[in-house]
Length: 241
Image (cartoon, rainbow, N blue to C red; front, side, top):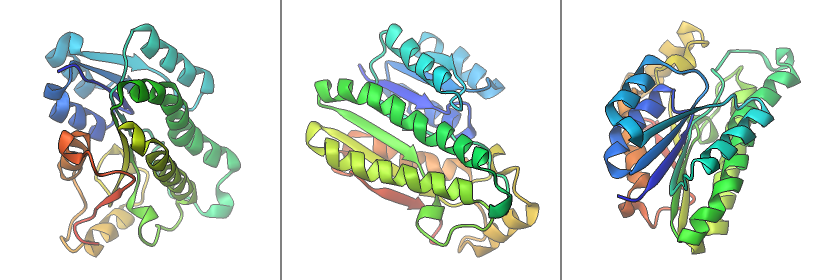
């Protein structure tokens, strides 16, 4: 069990659930968080020294670079990477969405992924192994939701990153994949109007929105040895939508 997992956005419900599910497979898990929460604190108690929590504000470039330096200074060499960060979804009409909102979303989700991967993919190349899982959205596979242009733009940028890196690193033993869930009922969507959450549930063949536990098995699989030939994929988790 010599593997090391790096999780950005680990304080999100998906982050803590993923860590809990895969922790047995790792010697060390480095968990980035913006704001500590009780569930991440509990995991830290359960896993002890095997879980190393590091704070950073990914909307700030300097803080993002400091996070990378801290991981390196600790001697941690990630063999796997889960990327989850995103600002909470807020319903806004496009013409009322300032460029600063777009920039913030891109900085938190895309710039951080680019910087972290630029820093740690070379180490994976040297080891000739590595798995990267990036959280995308059903919005890049189907008709996107109204009034979320900053969110949709950001997820498409991440999809482009998945596709390009998968091709570039395929011959180096590294896989890069995305997961595109339908709406998952977490704190992340609290900024949406209730009727939009209810409409999403009605549009699902299952008659409900996703729960965290619907997505975690896909993350587990993509990090597993059995997924070694799955690369550059954008896997939908939508109950059939």
